[in-house]
Length: 116
Image 1 (cartoon, rainbow, N blue to C red):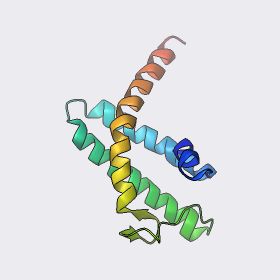
Image 2 (cartoon, helix red, strand yellow; image 1 turned 90 degrees about the horizontal axis):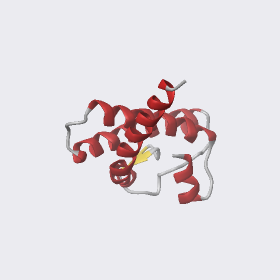
Image 3 (cartoon, rainbow, N blue to C red; image 1 turned 90 degrees about the vertical axis):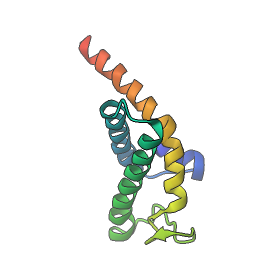
């Protein structure tokens, strides 16, 4: 998440690393618990999940603490400038890669943990 922000905007914020970790956990759970479900549905669930995480972090870091980490106010169909339909759709497309990747990463970490 943080790396994507650096690529997209040129910088990030420490809170995005935490949000990214949560997204990784959610993607891993989707990958592991919904193995028989079509990728399209996983992507929709991933997109909604990331959007919820982003909204919660936006309320905390942007609106409550006033850190102005991001602001989608200029983008159509936004909610309080914290989430918007455009990025929800983009997260859906990114989920197509992130969900299988996180599933593979989780398997690798589990195997690595068994060897300890």
